Length: 448
Image (cartoon, rainbow, N blue to C red; front, side):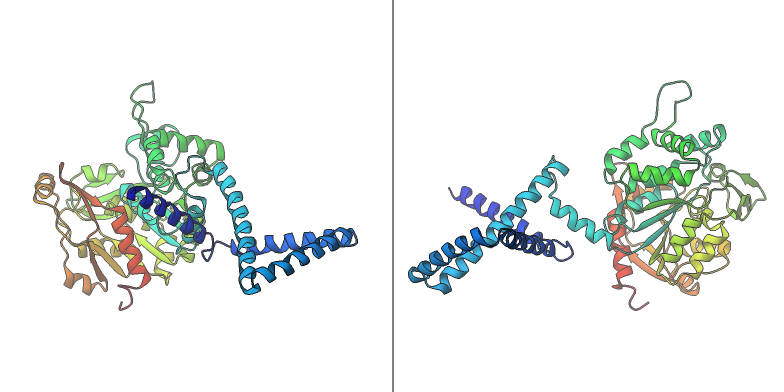
């Protein structure tokens, strides 16, 4: 019996809270409710004028007599509020039933209330204009968390990938590599889990299809239909209900090269980590490719710029090989932060400290592109450390004095997700986004 009463109370409380949500600021519902009521009153008055008040006069006279007699039985200070409350109840009940009918059509599965959808959408639409730069899985991980805070996200993605399915499509068809863009679109989509599984699906049979991911083929087909990758991404974003924008850094067919300290010159993004050497310099062919105009506009309008995480030389720095992009970032007055990797990467950053990461970006850019660096605080478990050590990968050391000399502030936070069963670490998208938005909002930036 008590459980039933408790259940009824919860249901009543839910209904009351549900009604209050519709009166929340920012939904623009209250004004329309009032407008609906005003329209009803005006329609009745208009009808009365139209028929020369004859029927309405008698109705009003009858209502007047009834109300006069009612006040003799029940005082006006009691009967008045009762009638007014009853009228408001009917008004809101009718409106809620109308909204309920709309909800049943738009969300037949009923997994989310329409009012909650509207509140969330209003909040996200008011979120800061964020530009995130990078590539690989690091950028898509970041976007997965950021989309919980804003719909005004622009991801600027490197197009230097030449390995795997992307590389094959690039060589065989001549399209820009779609792999990193595919991951970002999936990360920003509303139905992220299903879309990620679909886009990451790789064909295991079929002449010419083996090894290709569905997402890469989808974007390649869209590029052929729309004429270029930029239009293909825009069209795909509409089809997939993507929050924000995904833009390639350039539409040029860029190929990376790296000069190693032992004198070797390595051509191709996928070959650079495999060379297993310390990188002295990095560039691209053609040199100084033109930026996508939309990417420059996004950077200029940005209220917050985030760089990384991702492979330093093959995901982060390639964006800065586009002169207009690095110049636009350097000229921006928005808060700018670099998310440093948790572990060093064999073939790219072996033995690197946080300061070494910063120096590498500064060397390529020849100017200061960010104000602070976000570094993970807590060391991974011993199992993860042992597994990574087998590949000569270790936690990135925080050399505070060197970072201070480089004019950056260190933001230390626990932003790691660890699978201790297999000893695998990466950035947690939700922890990372929460820390980044806190810094942006001023909790850590106020004394910067």
